[in-house]
Length: 208
Ligand SMILES: *[C@@H]1O[C@H](CO)[C@@H](O)[C@H](O)[C@H]1NC(C)=O
Ligand SMILES: *[C@@H]1O[C@H](CO)[C@@H](O)[C@H](O)[C@H]1NC(C)=O
Image (tube, rainbow, N blue to C red; front, top):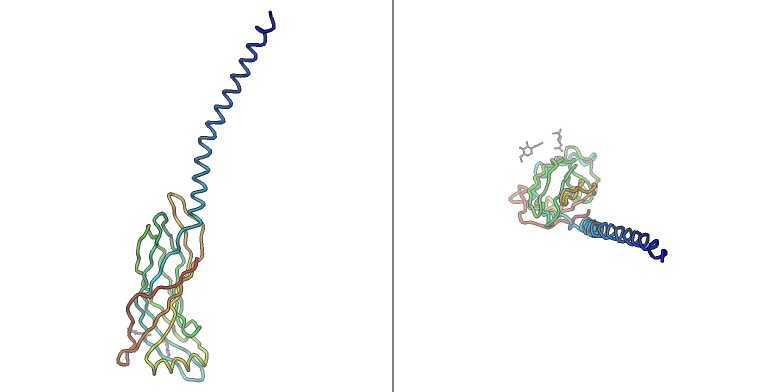
């Protein structure tokens, strides 16, 4: 007779305790699962923003001159206008340490032109202007030869390069720094003996 009255409160207490801990676990699960999903979603997006897009709008070469054939030193001024577009709906982009320079026949012919750091909103388009100067840039004899030939032909093909560091911004979070490189092909023609610019956007290749 005394046995059931003794065990039943203990049993109930045990049951009550189990129920409480189960409810606690459920609460924990309800907050943990959405948090985990959010983190996974963030990780997915962080790994998958689309690369920024660059277009070369115009390029102008001026002051192109080469020193005596014995010691080939090149002077030039290359002015380029680039369009930079962030194609992402959810990511902003911070650009730092951005520099531009020109390459002709595989050789750098201008010094670096440093561009100010900037932030690009979602799907924003920015215009970047770079004035690149080369003074006494040493070039190989073959480059000097090609340059003479191109001057006669009136058509120069050069490459405008841009590189720097970028950070993605999603929500209030900013990623670490990623290196990016942009390579644009510029075709510059001579107009009545004067080096002119060739207009029209040409797409550049971008690596992040
Ligand atoms: C380069 O050309 C521009 C005009 O196109 C001129 O104003 C400038 O003085 C020139 N610079 C040099 C170093 O010759
Ligand atoms: C290049 O520019 C420098 C400085 O302006 C000048 O001293 C030199 O003569 C120029 N060279 C040529 C080949 O024009």
